[in-house]
Image 1: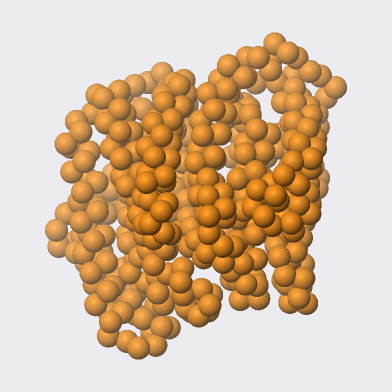
Image 2: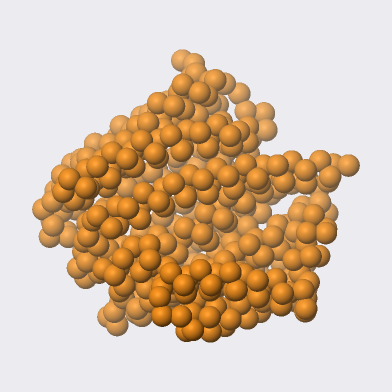
Length: 474
């Protein structure tokens, strides 16, 4: 009975999580397409140069307390208020740190305009701090409907203003205004719609208790954030803003599906895994099912996008973004195993082993940073292939550790993964053949997608029937 209730809850939450994630990201993607046609790749390159500093500040702002609050079953108003006031203090301190560091960061890149850009962009940090606890409470309540409303309204309003700025020739400032207003509008609506107000309470005991769990998550998050954004730092330093613009656009497109789909599901799976942390049999069953679902969703979509990358970029972004096509295809390959790695991390967190997440992240980053140094002298394409190698190595390490912990047969799980991967590769071949038959990109995109998806389900029906069996079990 408990298993049925959990599965029903997960299904409902998954629907709203997908709606929230993809309606929001879809609208954001729409505005990004419009802006990409109005702005130059160099404008995106300038913003990407600042990404590592803003992302690290955002990670430090949260400090792992969001995950700690979600996991704590007996959370109190003292816990919530303590985290809230800590976030406010952190947000203000981080803003002033970036403000005073901005001249040195501009000097590092040898781009004077970055000083002013960073000082305006960093205002996002204290704005987000005001609503961070409210966002966490909505996640705890699984109130995805309200998150959808807030996100859509804030993105639409800020995106509209950003497009107007770009249309009238403000260049990179269109991106700055969009980012600032998005955070501001969202924060205002979280305070209006979320029925929680902080109390004048602060407990060092509560802060220490939450930090005991959150510190490993913080360190893991800092490692991941630093590693993900180190590419923008290195490319911005040793290449041109134009090159970084192409790379950052390819990276954002590659993450759009894989990352959003994965995080939408993981966000639903994580609370459910936490609820079953004391029931090992149920935990193993849920992990195995979630792994199959993630692979069935991510593998075919990523391989489809690899095959359709060329017509997709030309149709959506225009000819000026053609140099990003090959980079997009390479980076997409690296994201194929991204969902399993993140599911493994969610598993370790759910059984109160965040130290394992930290160890996996540390090993991943050491390997990745080493490959970055090795591939950097050989250009952007080789650097992108280095990220693929890192992803594969990380997947293998994380997979083996998790299988040993769960005492699940590695060969059995690996066989299921390989079946889905084989189906996806077959679909990729079909898509490549279809694309070669048409000259116009719009036809390549349309028929490639339709025939490719159909071939995936047809080949599955004729061979493994993985999709049918998974749906039947769910």
